[in-house]
Image 1 (cartoon, one colour):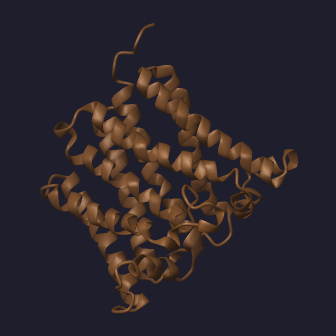
Image 2 (tube, rainbow, N blue to C red):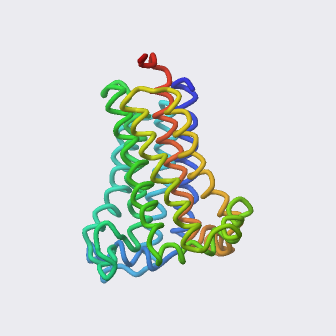
Image 3 (cartoon, rainbow, N blue to C red):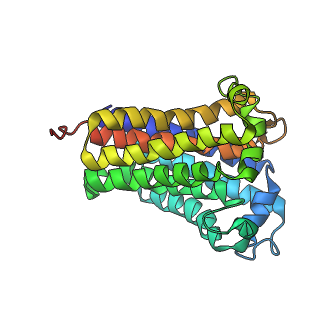
Length: 281
């Protein structure tokens, strides 16, 4: 994929995800997430949940607008980058709050509501690639885009080996036409172990492929990682309560749609790594 196609694809993924998230927050989806986030800044005592949702949604919709304007070179990219930074950093800082961690299950690296928050690590590297491609080396861009992919696959994938997470994904797996067969071969925990093992294995292999500049390994592991993030998008259609008639996306829908950012991260890695000469042994 050349740079033009990569830029177009990533811009589309960002615009689609943030417009859906923005509209759903503005319409009042997932108030518990808003309270958990803004209580960290003590804003929940100043503004009501509807106002917080409207502010969050408006910020995301504005991010879509300035991203598209910058993409078509109608404005400088600075405003898009700064707004993306704000939209990402505000939730990410709340990982410092105790309510994001499940201390009764060992604390780090077990996370609770932080599962959806860590996904915001994927956003800023995409904006750096889109608008500041020549300010950094290809190696730096690849590293910055690999880190969030590795983080979410290793962290959330590793959680699949715990009983609480194995039970939590039953509703997703058993309703999926692509994954429900796992329960006919494995127990609930066994199926979760297979899913987690897949995530962890191919995250590590992708890292190895990047380190060794091995195109075949990057392609195989990259496609495997891509399948994880594309599979989660099918949950929007197969799992109950992903959409809401009143807020467009429900809590599950908001959680799942963020995986489009990781598709973008993988596009950056493929674009920059597969255009390089392969390392010969």
